[in-house]
Image 1: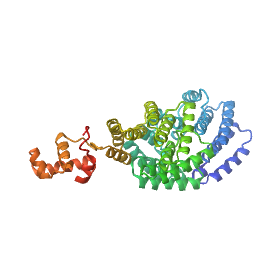
Image 2: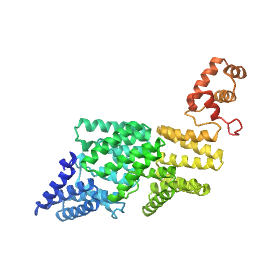
Image 3: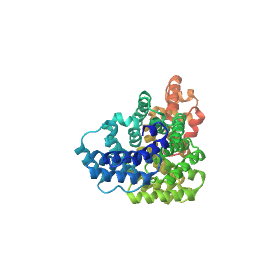
Image 4: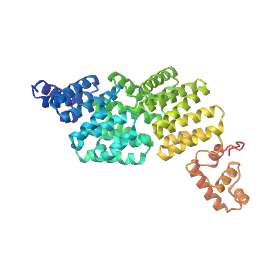
Length: 462
C-alpha cells in the first residue's frame, strides 16, 4: 500500500495480489489484504473488481467476528457504489454507524467518518458532509473534502484558507508526490471558483502529472474537470470542451457514473451550447436528468434543467427555457449550493433579457450578482455585469450608489462637465470629482464614456 501511495500503483497491486495468494487460512490477514487490494483497485478505477473484493472482505470479517474489518468493508462497498452510480444497499450507512459505536474509536486516519463524509459529498449532501468533517478538521485537511463541502455550501473564504492549510500540512508531513494530489486538487478547486485561474491551472496541471504517473485515474478526471471549468469561467468554450469532454469520456470508460462527483464536469453543457453543438448538449442533459430522477438527487435535476434551458433558448424557445429554469430553481431550493443557484439565475436573466422583459431580467441578474460577489466569484460576477450592460439602465455595481452619486452619474452620462454638475447640484467641483471616482469604483467603469454606455436615458427603471 505504501508503494501505491508513493506513486507506483502497479507495483502495489502486484505485491498485494501476491500477499493475498499467500495469505492461507489466516482469516484476519486475508480480510486485511483483500480490503487493501480493493482500495488500490479503486485508485486504478477498477471499480467492479474493487467492489467484488470488498464484498469478499465483508464475508471474511463477518465470519470471524472482526467488527473493524466489517466496518471497513462496508465503507469500501459504499464508496464503490456511489462512484458507479448505484444505489447503496438498504441500511448500509445505519449498519456502519452502529458498528462504529460498538467497535469504539479508531486512529484518526482510519476514522469511518471520513469515508462517510466522502459518500455524503458524492451523493450531493454537502451539508451532512460538512457536519461530519467539522469534527475531523485535521484529517479532512489532508483529504480536501472539507474544502469541497465549504465551496459547495458557500463558505469560499474559509475553503481557500483550508486548501492552503492542506498544502502546507502535506508538505510539512513530507508526503510522497501521490499523497499530495488531494491538496493540489483542493487548491485548484477553490482558486478556479474564485477566478484565480492561472494558479488553478498550475495546481491542477501538477495534479494531472502526478496522478497519471501514480495510476490514479479519478484524480486525473477531477483535475481535468477543474481545468475545464477554469476555461469556461474565462469564456473559453473550446478550451473548456477539450478538458470536460475528455473527463466525461474517461468517467464513462471507468464506470464512474455518479453525477455529483466531479460535478463541474457537467459544465460541458454550457461549453457545448456556446459552441453550437446543441444535439450533444441535449443528449447529455437528458442522461443527467434520467440519473437525477432515478436517485432523486437535486443537483443533477437542477443542472439538467439548466442545460435543457440553454438548448431551448438557443433554439429560440424562450418560454420553454423559462419553464426549465423554474424547475431548476425549485431543485436548487433543495440543494442549497449558492454558486450553482447563481449560475441558473444568470441563465434566467439572459433568457428574460432576450424575451424583452428588461425589469425582470435586471432583478434576476442582480440576484445572481449579489451571490457571486458575496462568494467572491469575480469572473462570474463579470459575466453578470456584462449582461446588465446589455439591458441598459443602472448597471451591476460592487456597492450601492448614494442619492447624490446617482444624480452625479446621470448628469455626467448626459454629457455635463464637472463644473456644470457642480453648479446644478450646488457642489464644489472637487466634491463632484470625488463622487465620480466613487461611482467608477462601484459601477466598475473607468471613464465617462463607459458610464454613458451603462446608463440608458430613456429607461424607466433608471
